[in-house]
Amino acid sequence: MAADRLETIVSLAKRRGFVYPSSEIYGGLRASWDYGPLGVELKNNVKRQWWRAMVQGREDVVGLDSCVILAREVWEASGHVETFTDPLTECTECHKRYRADHLEEAFEAKNKRKPESMAEVNCPNCGNKGKFTAPKQFSGLLKTFLGAVEDESGMAYLRPETAQGIFINFENVATTSRKKPPFGIGQIGKSFRNEITPGNFIFRTREFEQMEMEFFVVPGTDEDWHQYWIDTRLEWYKNLGINPDRLRLFEHPKEKLSHYSKRTVDIEYKFEFNGT
Image (cartoon, rainbow, N blue to C red; front, side):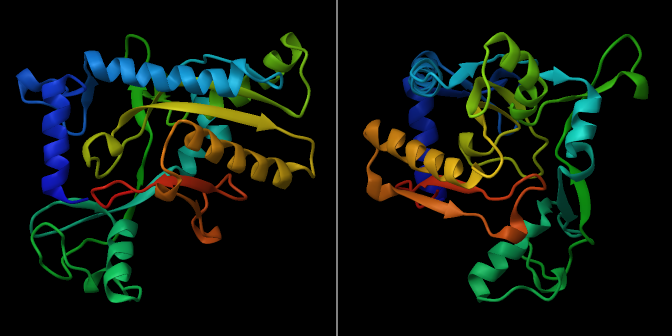
């Protein structure tokens, strides 16, 4: 992103009452933002439009509102405790921390090849080369403690995504709503991720809101349904009045898929300040 253009947008958003830096009178908290009078109305309008299109307007989708804190066993069973990690590296000169894979991707984009090792990579902050520590896995889960004593027995996680609340309620929802595949469960709610490098205004934060729908299908029909939802979601954005020339589909390389994913496609928007 062009820093000067983004700073102008942030300043305007604050002056007009869309977004404020959180905890500003106490020095602020990095990458934390509060939505002001206009911002909250805009956000609620988007959520209402999504809910009408994804839940209320369909016979094959129902809604849910699950807890932010789930049993720790949920995240162990889903694989998040073991695999929801990012490679962390630190510059030994300026002590800035980065995701090693992001540094490698930036190097590859600039030099048209992958670095042989982190020794080839310059620090984006201080410019020194070959000063990074060996990458180590850093958990993206935010921990908290339940109960009077902060020990292992009371440790829990703030959910990093809303999907797991849907999965653990599948049987309840299917039974009470008398649904069977193919059908979906949608919900809107807060999620939390312990990002190594949060920033870029509201685009990468540790606390964010998700609008998510999980669609359950008969085995063997998953690929057709996945393509149906890719096309349907793309049309939804166009129907909102978004310029289709600024939208694109990004197919994730198989080697970079999440541990639970067979295929992932993002709908990306190209901003005027050269970001997606």
